[in-house]
Image (cartoon, rainbow over all chains, first blue to last red; front, side):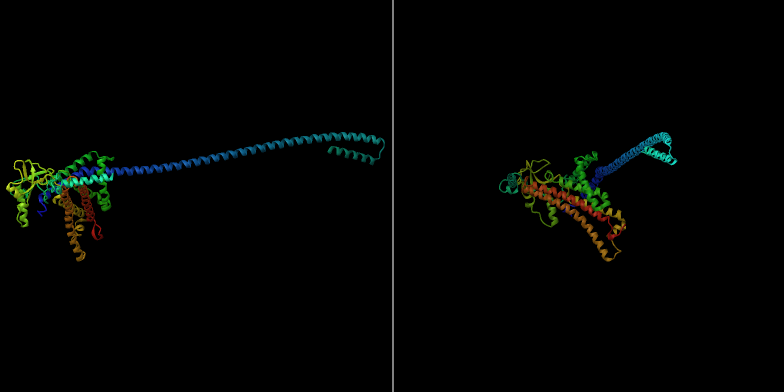
Length: 166
Length: 354
């Protein structure tokens, strides 16, 4: 053992030296540096998480935006459809109104015409009746039988009727 | 291009061989110095004992060159850690980044081997790694093993006699070598081209082979020697590591849980013997921890000494690289084994859960 150089005081000196080193390094090197390493890994983790959440947020907001755009488009389309609807209804209403008005005007005009015609026919009839009477009077002067008389009147009336209707 | 590099390498190798011990045989040896004295025990840096008492233990207390080297490593580490921790920030500088890389390596393996205990084991494992690697690496710096004081021939002879006595032999004075240094100062080193500057004690006693006025014979005792070439340092580390490992085992599993692994009376005679074998295994771990580190680094230093003798200055360079690698590997092996043993110690045997 002595030939190997084993020597108790030297062994103790080395043990003490190493323990002193262990103590000093623990306090001076390991503690602060491990703290720094831990802090850094915590920071990295934190920033990774932050990045992750930012990404999620961005995705969410994009989705929201898409949704908004979709909604706006839908709304626009709805509004256009509504407008088209209103316009169509308005047009139909107006057309119906116009048609009614026209029909009414036409009916009125027709009625007027009818009336005019009726009165004209009446006038004519009156006139023909007068004519017929005068004609009859003349015929009578040539002394006609009762039946001839009637015959002539009817014939005249019939002729006048065809005039009125014609 | 590659041919030019090859040529330079070959020329450098030839210069190295010519300048070393082989070249010396042919009258060259302009770079070499005599082979440094190799001995296992660490040498004291102060020739006299620190305290003059009769108590053997206190008289034995000396400051050895390996202690100086290990304290230099400790001071270096403390200075570096002060510099780093003062400027510690979440955005690391270069030095902090380098140290953090080592930290994260050990935290990484710690978590894969020891899981939740990684943080508990970390300071010791990390300190073992840093202490060993810094010691190994400063141990191959120039000046380690080459600058020192001169042990007088009388003392050299005394030590040689002591050693021979232990082995039951007689000292052959012609085979006890002394180096011859230029000058008479306290601080010496061997200059290049001094391969022949050594004499035997026999020659010294006859007053031959050196100039009394301008030269000093004796042995160079270096002021600095790589701490792990002294068995006390690896043994100290191994003891600390094993005590810590068992302390962690005890504090995690409780006294019965931990001691029960080694003295197992409940599960029959086979498990009792297995437990006893585990005790032997634990003791073997101390020995293997110690001699793995000591053997590698001591052998590395011997290799460097011999290469400095054979292929001085130039041929030495690849071996310095090799020693850097060995020093790194030993630091890794010691610290990772500590981690592995610690994580084994905190796990109960036979699937018992605490």
